[in-house]
Amino acid sequence: MKKLKLGHSSLEFAPIALGGNVFGWTIDEEMSHKLLDAFVDAGFSLVDTAEGYTWWVPGNKGGESETLIGSWLRKNPSKRDKVLIATKCAVLSKDRIRHSVEGSLTRLNTDRIDLFQSHRDDKDVPLEETLAAYGELIKEGKICYIGASNYDAERLAEAADISRDNGLPEYQCLQPHYNLLERRLFEGPVENECLRQGIGVPTILWPPASSAASTARRPISRKAGGAPATP
Picture: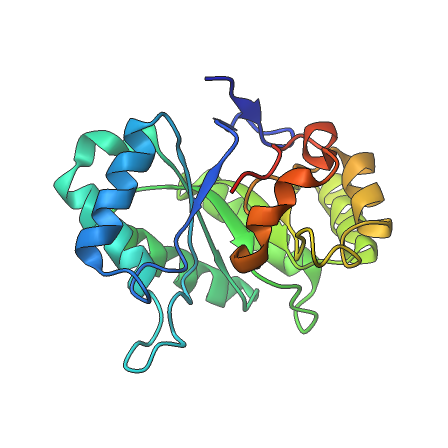
């Protein structure tokens, strides 16, 4: 199966991702494990989750999705090297990022996170603080690469300038709000900035309820170092 590279990173994956936002919500542990097994056995690898999934379910507090992935890895330790784990947090201060990464590592039952993403643009925190925090965690081997989600073009450009000028890690991908029915937030300035920087726009688009229709879209992902969306 052909694999595509994410941005300028060394991460390569088959062009489909498994979204973990249903784990602990509409899918229980047993079914989550079955889906993960089938996904990996079919030759795919990129699994996307977040520390906040699935806080919106009555009785949940967040971290349930990561915990189910972690219990699967505990049962199948040999499969860790067959998957790329992507997770994220929303509050981007230095201390909060470290707290989030440590918590995610524990819940996921792993020693590293392949792709850690800024779940949103936290404008209360300087971008330099956020990127420097990521740099420390990369040096420690706790995360491998970083990505962004829900950033506009101006802030993506600003982040790239700060990374370059200060020797800090760069965002390798963008997870946008984009599907066939909702295109305006990505197409235009954000798309152009991704192309300018070579930022990957992989299969982890949202919201998933509409992204199944995204296969008909033009292949921005190929140009920007990502992969075309698939249902």
